[in-house]
Length: 214
Image 1 (cartoon, one colour):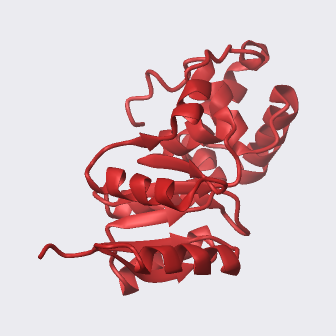
Image 2 (tube, rainbow, N blue to C red):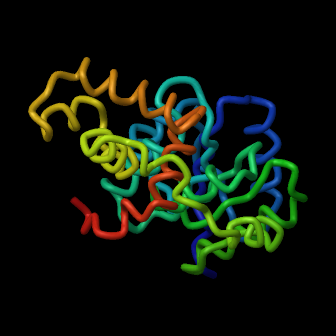
Image 3 (cartoon, rainbow, N blue to C red):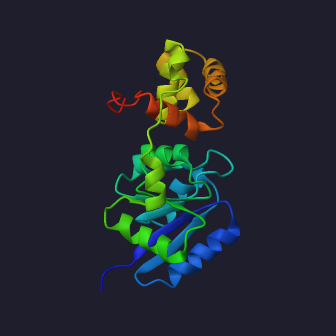
């Protein structure tokens, strides 16, 4: 018999974690090896309990899911990350896949869809519900990015690539406070509520196409 799929659940809602854990433990060929309630606890949890799949929420206290996806894949590139989010907006889906997620499921999905998504990403596929895929296929206009200054565009690009404020400050040889100021101005100019929406603007404007990973 093949080894069961080892799964870590990262979500700040205990009731949801308990429900997903119960579903996994009743599914054939799957095993829940641990839980975490914050994105920044993902890597330490995986060090204690190695897993091949992480089910990740996006909005959690602390850093949240996107930085956790990037940190996890930087450490273990082969891990498959399946986002399980309350939101099915284009910006959130694009940001998750840009960070390296292998699949995206909304929390209102049926249990069998989540199990299907787990098996799909475990097999090396990308998973996105057809309804979400239709939304993702809609073109995203550059919108307000062309109104940004060259420095603001540079900060937006680095933020979208997953750099922290401190890393951006070191890269641009400015203070972290200056980067925080640029970030606040970006959110105002782009009318973005969060980092996921800023990533959406960067993707729509083609800022990441020539990033070359650095």
